[in-house]
Amino acid sequence: MIVVGVDGSRAGLEAVAWAAAEAALRDVPLRVVHAIHRWAAETEQGRYAEVAHWMRQGAATVLAAAVDRARRAHPKLTVESRILPGDPRAALIREGEQADLLVVGNHGLSAVRGLMVGSVAYGVAGHAPCDVVVVRQTPVTSSGEIVAGIDTSPRAAPVLEFAFAEAALRGADLRAVHVWSRYDKHGGFQPIPDDVGEDEKNEVRQLKETLAGWCGRYPDVTVIEEVVRGHPVDALRDAARGADLLVVGSRGRGELAGLVLGSVSHSLLHHAPGPLAVIRTSAEARRGNEHRGK
Image (cartoon, rainbow, N blue to C red):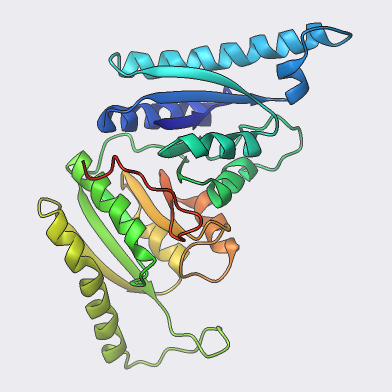
């Protein structure tokens, strides 16, 4: 099952459109959810019962519009809706326990005034127990390409699993991008000398070794290998321009696999040029998605 969070905003409806198309491709049900204050969801009597009823009616209207959007685009798709009580971040994370994939817009979804733009998407992407797709905007036309950020460590396996399966499902090419820089022993950047030929050849070799087994499992997927020296955010953002989906890894604590700080994942969540898939890479954070590769 795919779960998508909505709030009545344009970003939410973009997320619904993406999630519905993905659910149709995977042939799985879609659940559309909207979060409101717990007291509003649960209050039936008393002083504020009328206000709570009004808020539930508003939530029902938001859900109805989202369900209609999904069903008009994919009439055969099984779609259900649900009002979630409580903070939207916590509510969506709980929903993720039952989902193969959780989809949100790049902003909004806030039942609490004052939440900064993107805080829900950022919180969900960092802590959901399943893989998450954040839909910033969708390409007007499909490019037929999936981009995956690969770090050549064992943690890359879930990212490659997701990216290859998506490419196979869509009949798309897969651009595997490995970004590298030279670090000193304290973790800071060192100046890179003019002669980096051997280092770059080593990075290319590691990427080929990382991809080898996956190419064998998905022989029909055309793979484009790309090794880039520089900053991961800049390189991945540039590589993903016009792509159908950018796929990156996360240990489940808010940072991307192989990168130093959560600020990098935060930057991609806010500035990726299109839909961004954040894939669980740590054993304790990741849940199995048995439908992949079928």
